Image 1 (cartoon, helix red, strand yellow):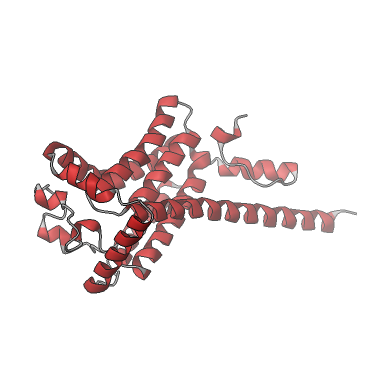
Image 2 (spheres, rainbow, N blue to C red):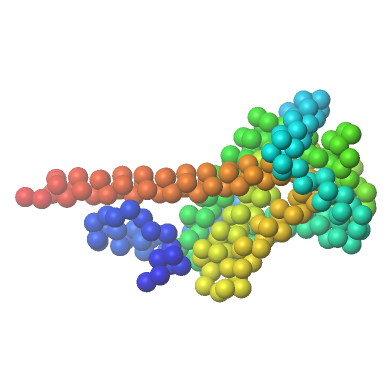
Length: 272
């Protein structure tokens, strides 16, 4: 059996109980319960994201701090890439719609695919996504940051506003209902890495695995090219994803170890 494709391995436990747990882990969760979790989670996500303090002066000051740090680290590629995108409307429009639409649709599509086609992996991967999102929301609240496109005097082109892309910041009714300073860390990168990780780790088709590699790279290019994020936002977003993977594994290992000890105690009690 290919454990990499069949599902995540647990810590070693006694044979019979371990087999029961593995089988139970491959049973698909209740769809309505998962749908409820997703709907409630999305509402909580939007609510907390929009609770981010909106001190414009502080957010802009932090934006300049990030600018200077990227220059010091020789990571200041954002301005040149953004200006290139801003000079080519077809590229800018494609990137604008990519940024506005794929963040939720691709992530949701991968989650549904896991639920339907890879139930053994679903709980593990869903937990990683939830942990990454919670960490990201904490980051939004503690460190409001002005994105490059809003940085006064930064020289960046807000490609969405410049080309009047439908359905995003160019529409005042949308912009006023979404906190513009929830930029650090980049959950676009954290979620894209999650999608790539799922596709690469779980799929058995090489072209799907290749998409798992390309999607985060394309997302990185888009978020910088449209001036929605600094490169350091993406770096921290990648760290958030890595932390979520580690925390999920730690939780799973702790749970499996606790269960093994409980079974061992029961066997000790009932043994003559």
